[in-house]
Image 1: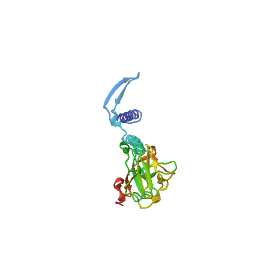
Image 2 (image 1 turned 120 degrees about the vertical axis):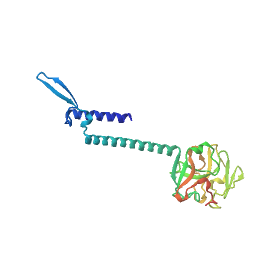
Image 3 (image 1 turned 180 degrees about the vertical axis):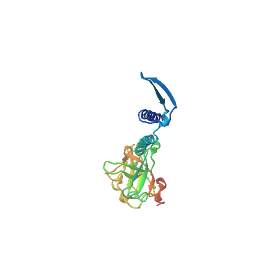
Image 4 (image 1 turned 60 degrees about the vertical axis):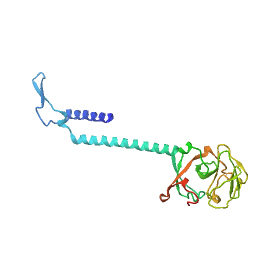
Length: 245
């Protein structure tokens, strides 16, 4: 508001200058005074500025100033929106596109998933939560389901999973038979490690393989929270299991 008033004042001053040097008076006898110039008296007249306002030129100048003001406002709004979007994407929520079939039928190739990168940290990750994480051995982020928690032991015998020696009951596997690979030997998880599997275990590169292994806490990007595309299949991921598919 202060800057706008400054502009108005500057324009007013310019109008006064213009009138003083160029404007022709439209009315006479508004205010007069006499002055002795050594030869004779001369009559001078003063005219209020607003009576000789070059309205057309003023409107053009005002229009340009208004456009410039709106342009600056627009650029500021765009900058704020960009910064806000970047902060949200980096620290709060992120949308990622699923590549591959390792988590069918939960999500499919090409689905868009919303990742919670902040609020999941307010509580401990639970068994069967679906997480997105990164690995140096993989060029892209991976999405898998947590099977083993920090401090537990995990062993697989065929399609059976044992946690701390007890058979794990779960219904997320797409198929009833799959390879245990390196998980056929009991694995002890560190306090910051998770054992993860894809639901489509015959087409999933996960903790059973040395290329992936256990997922460390600092490798976790966030918790997969919802499928947001395709629009007709929008759902919270924790509400979907094999029985729903």
